[in-house]
Image (cartoon, rainbow, N blue to C red; front, side, top):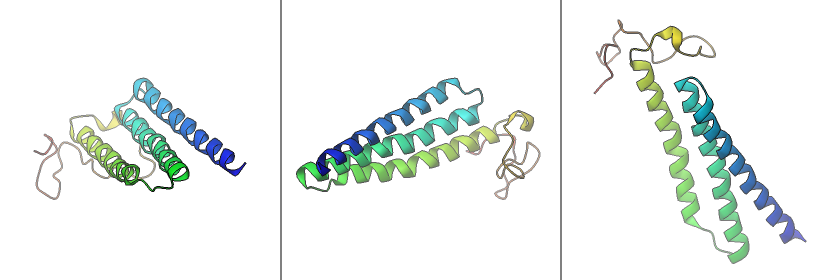
Length: 132
């Protein structure tokens, strides 16, 4: 009885992860702004694939009694690379000659890395071109 409940829980995690991945893919295709399109797949990847990895690791532990390091390593790699790639893609978007008015408004204050085309950053680069 308990094993059946655990299997149902793992199946629910797999379905939930698939739903998150599907919503993220849909958001990547349908959202109008590049910054919004960037947000959808990174969250969906982290939650959706993370849930599938947890379900896979727990399923292997329950059936064979073995702790799998492959799922843990993939999850660590995923949780590190998805936010960092989103951060750098957003910075490139902000450093391009994109009018500040066309960007979605920040939650509070101003964009932390966007100084405009006239300002120089602390490293001495101007906002005219992306850093090389």
